[in-house]
Amino acid sequence: MSDTADFETVAALLRDAGIAHGITAGDLSVLSTKGISHDHWRIGGSELVLRIPRMNQWDLGDAEALRYQETAFRRAAESGATPKCIAALAPAGGLPHGALVVEEITGRPPDLPADLDAICDALTAIHGVPLLDEIDMPPLRIHRNPMSSTLQTIEEQAAYLPDAGLDRESLAGIREDLNWAREFAGHGEPDFALCLAGTDTHPGNFLIDDAGKAWFVDLEKALYGAAPIDLAHATLATSTGWDPDCTGSLTPDDVQRFYQRYLDAVGRDRAAELGPWLLPMRRLTWLRTITWFARWIAAWSDGGHAAARDARMRDHIRRHIERSFDPETIADCRRDWLAPRALTI
Image 1 (cartoon, rainbow, N blue to C red):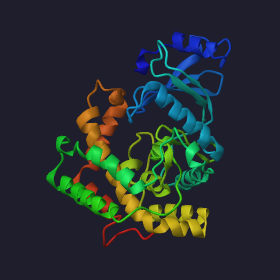
Image 2 (cartoon, rainbow, N blue to C red):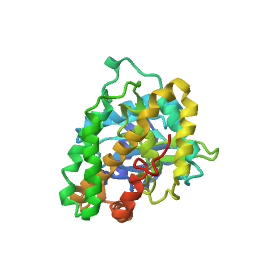
Image 3 (cartoon, helix red, strand yellow):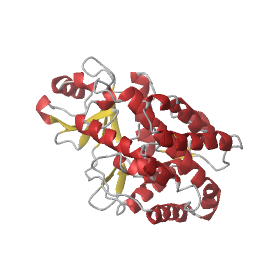
Image 4 (cartoon, rainbow, N blue to C red):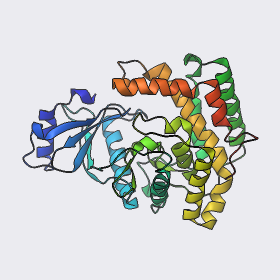
């Protein structure tokens, strides 16, 4: 785990890699430990940050996970909406999972709904990165069939539902949507083109700079997939309340405007391709998130687990997940796709 890393060891690794000549342990400081998968350390005076893994949510090996993230950062940088990756430090003694050295983005967490346009513009830029030939896409994952790929993730996480201690009414609503997803996925896959997708696009993974521009700063789960899933994850209530430093909430009108801004930006033809899939994939993304919450409760919420090490974040996550599993909260989320208040996008 990254808490076994120490400033002296990491400073020596940085010097050996030629990244920061003359750097000492005193030049390093902890920037944040609230991330589920990473700690972030600032490299003083360099405008660089270390992303130090604590765990990998896809159970990749250390070297494989580091290469995956390095590739994602380098490819997404073409969007102009993500930090540049400067180097990767291989797993070594004192830094067992390795680390990425990335450009530091000076900014603040988003305020919602005020910064929603900026988040939309960042996603538009990331999704607009030109696609590689499929043979060149690895090591990033390719969700050629995004419905079935996402449903597979949901099914794996849904196995934790019985151990999450859920209210009967809440569990019934989740299982109703799960049955819908199984049936809907059986009707085929979308025919729109894939794009470079961030996947974990909750608002807390963006920073807003002094010019009001949004930067997406966590590419751990980037892959080639479906744009509507990113749009949903940026605006669902399960996402907007995730980060304790990201304030505000969204109304249905806010969500409508967000989607419309995106569709206007990508053009009429692309909008026509995506349109029929926006609500189904919003529903699917909610299922992906709510079953991840069940997994967190059942498998990761213990204070000794790497995903729950930061006490402040652990307590916030616990409260947020409790609210998200409340029957009234679940019913309100599901109104986005169930009559009579379904979104019209």
